Length: 297
Length: 255
Image (cartoon, rainbow over the protein chains, first blue to last red):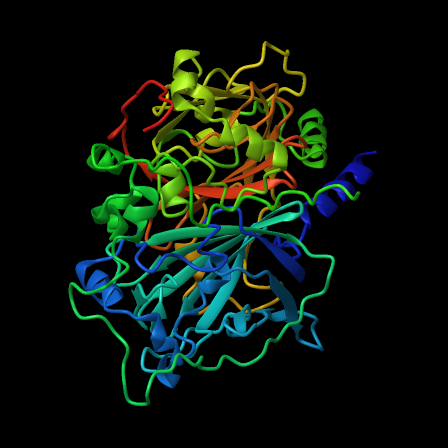
């Protein structure tokens, strides 16, 4: 009896040193929060809840979506944090050392507006700060219990939000992949010493998709917006025509639409309490399901 | 010998002997947390306009109910707390205070609406009358120990693990299932959930590289009457060193 107990005890203690969970597969996005931003895209001037500084705000207000037609900016809207902020699901697979069976990297597939992301799991260091930056950035990861924690550097300058709020190429992303049953939630902690005064926290949940997703997408190409070559579409200070859209449609005071760290915290409600006027009824992007078709005659 | 047998038995059962939910906690939720409203801003920081359902997989019944929403009528009927029920409260901007109420109940006080949730670590929770916060059954979702890169991989030269350590040596999260709810609102503009709604939540604590201690709550609302599919949102909080900003306020039907 004693020997059996000892043997069982030893076996129990010999559990794998590294707890992990299975992430490989196709995951469908559940865009139940920030539905507009994670769908068709945010309003042109909606910086609410973003801890941006004055420089970021000024740059965002100068942004024209016509810049998408410039080859220099063709993929600028979609840095790696688009995984959480974009509309799509994700395909995850492991790259394996054929001899040892160890996972060298975890890969998250690309689509047109998001680059392939490689999460190196083999302990390699991040490259020199002078190394080239690319769309997918450079990401390392490790397991903390059953949570995959990743860290991304070397991304390209682009948009923190798809309305021209900028991110610099010094921005970093710490991501936590947390799986509970069939719900996988990814929390991103985005820091940017150039444009953010505090980290931005964003998260999104996914569920298994029975339909396999493609691990690749078409290339990211410049759109055609009728902009002549050599011209940089922009708005001069004080001329952005969209600055009062949120006020017009939702009664949100302009100062709130322009963001800043203070807009992330509960007490900001007091600041705008007397300036907010709730419109009678939603008229734009209301998200109601289509009414059922009339019964057949 | 007896102690050894007890220890081995405990190992096999996955929990040390005579542990209470309080002493077995793999994460420390106690203390004050503040909402970080970086998502769904215009549904949380102001009262959304009537008929704005963006993102919520509502049924036609829900649309009909929400189109009848009247904050004035709710106030007159004493139903100002409809948007502070368990399926919505974690999305309400505010401060959240966790304490232990004995060894088997985790108590969550919320300053917005002055609400209290009780997470009971007992499977058989006595059914009470339906309330805004319902009856919540809690359990620790324990994870195996261990941290590192992929199995067998060499350790990073500058270990992320040194920076990204969890709050406690043990790992896990809190799972809470809440039922027996009074019907209420998922959003302040009357997007409804019914009294048959079931709320499943996972509370995960993590320490960021910058030292912030964060709480992420993943909420799954199932409601066959008003939702076409489970409504899933995840909400972030930052731990505070003290009670700063704690300001209990009564429920209000709009703000």
